[in-house]
Image (cartoon, rainbow, N blue to C red; front, side):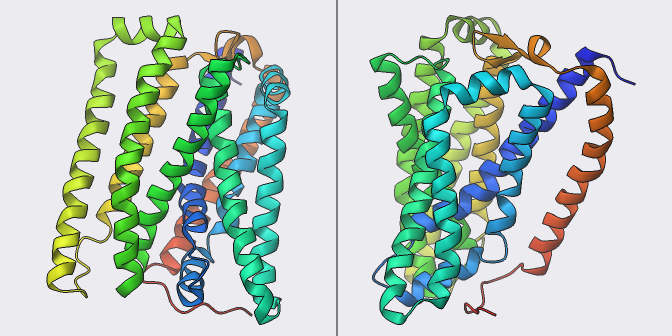
Amino acid sequence: MFEQEPLAIIFAALMALTVILYAILDGYDLGVGMLIPLKDEQQSDTMIASIGPFWDANETWLVMAMGLLFIAFPLAHSIVFKALYLPTLVLLISLILRGIAFDFRAKALFAHKPLWDRAFKFGSLFAALSQGYMLGQYIVGFDSSGMSILFSLISAVGVAIAYTLIGAAWLIMKCEGELQTRAIKWFYKALFVSWLGVIAVSIVNPLVNDAVFNRWLTTPAYWILPILCGLCFVVALFEIRKMIARKAINESDDSRCWSPFALTVAIYLLCFVGIALSFYPDIVPGQLTIWESVAAPQALNFILWGAIIVIPTIILYTIFSYRVFWGKVSPLQYY
């Protein structure tokens, strides 16, 4: 039996794990959805096929994260979702729209298929924008002033661009030929915008929160994170330029196609750890710590046994599914 304080740390760590797994796994399929070309049916089908075996399961991590927040930190859950009711509603509607569009595009008449492609594309876009807005509001402590709303809107666009970055990296790894070449160009453009977005958040975050500013100022070890993140961007830039040069010589050259995705995942991890360290132990910035909001230890000790079984099982299933469908994407098929 664990006491309340270690339980708070354990469940905060589990929630952090589920959030970053969601951001990476559902992030790339949201990115692919936003990148779907509406006037090229063959490429749209290939892009849908690249995420087909995974996209629905990827959303499991979002459900897990929200469930852990509700069960382990009920007071924080009520504060967060009271402040984020509207963007949460937009997110849920967008995810439902994506699910409907994914199935209906296969069953609709040929003339109606573009309609469902647009629904999937814009469902992905608004899901990404709503998540980015929620992140921005979290950083500013759910402040509703004009400048905070503006920052949250900029954060919404930044997260959408970051998802297109990892989505393009996924397509580089999974696709071939003309679509892969197109994905390389998408990645190259998104890389610069994402870089600017990370810099902007790194500047604004300590400026709007004195506690974050003091923490980073008094803990020089934290600076290794932005340095490593910057190095990942630089390496990604060199990798994508080399890839463009190799493609110019030999269009079928597919060497190191995995590197943009691996580097993007590293960027995601470094940014996430930076945000986590900025606010820990606060679960609601400036209002509530994990110690103040954690549920009763009797309930959490019981739930922990379920988490020990369920979360590793989902991770193993995820690894297995990616192992089964590894390699280049095959033509889209519906059964």
